[in-house]
Image (cartoon, rainbow, N blue to C red; front, side):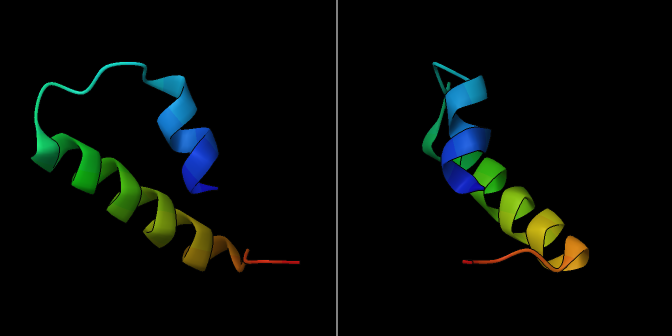
Length: 37
């Protein structure tokens, strides 16, 4: 889930943008009930 979110964006302008993408990916996955299978 995190790897897929990061793969879509090749370059991040700041460290905060990386953190935000990871945070949103985790938040989205927890809403959908996804996790390690």
